[in-house]
Image (cartoon, rainbow, N blue to C red; front, side, top):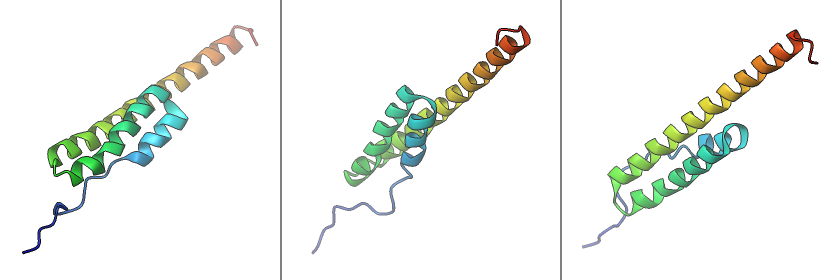
Length: 91
């Protein structure tokens, strides 16, 4: 009788690409948290903790989205401030 420690099915998407893009392009602190969460997905899945692996994947996605949103908000605010500065004759 052979036993296998590998769980059935594939682990959830760890969203590592989005976490890295968030870190590099948008918001460094939330991107780092997203990277940490995404790297735990496979380890938790292989340990058999499927619920924790799915939660880590969801958290990585959540932090990546938050980081991208914050980065986008800062870009919009920057362009508004530049436009106001140009309109006021500051540049």
